[in-house]
Image (cartoon, rainbow, N blue to C red):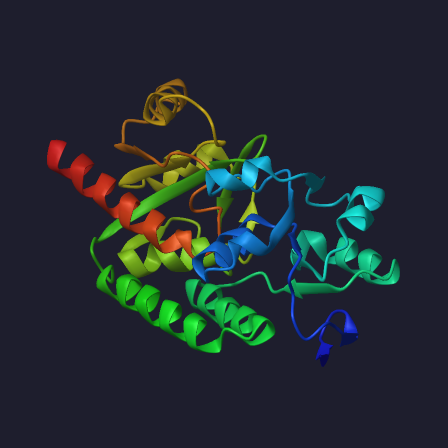
Length: 265
């Protein structure tokens, strides 16, 4: 298979991929959603869904690769995302690995576009088209469910929020949960917490790190420590920050939690 990649340039890849290494959780998710998760032979340290991937060897973090281990797995295809993995993808191509990097989406529709790209790459166009259609219908059903201004924060070793240009902001806006920093021309940034209070959001949406216990209690404690009195909703961690096909189910779960919270107010 010969193709041209905007980042990697001309690529020559096998016509069939029997042994795949995924170095990004969104791509691991997509492979299972397309029914070819059994082809995975290696993963990144951040690929932890579905549970069966935990038995696979950990080949890399988001930016560093265990090259000898990767070579020993003899992959037909190594999948990454662009963005923070840009240099990693270029380096692996230089090392002679069969690499393909999927773009970082700027909206939830970009997640569906990535499915189409993977479908073309893997010879699964029909499956990818059907899956994208079903996910698009679920996403459309969430349109304008609410009319609220929200402050969204995720824990990436410190508070990070979203401004203009992120797929998370676009998804929240689609639900009618308008992020309070949409006027900031930066997709992801560390917020001024005093400015959050000044903007008076209707809701605090918090995404903790994965594997934590009682995320709502942690979010509530954060709000109280900051002197905030607006209602709190929390995800279970690494959900909105995850841009594979699971993202749409996570959005549905978030909408349910917002509804529950508003009903209790």
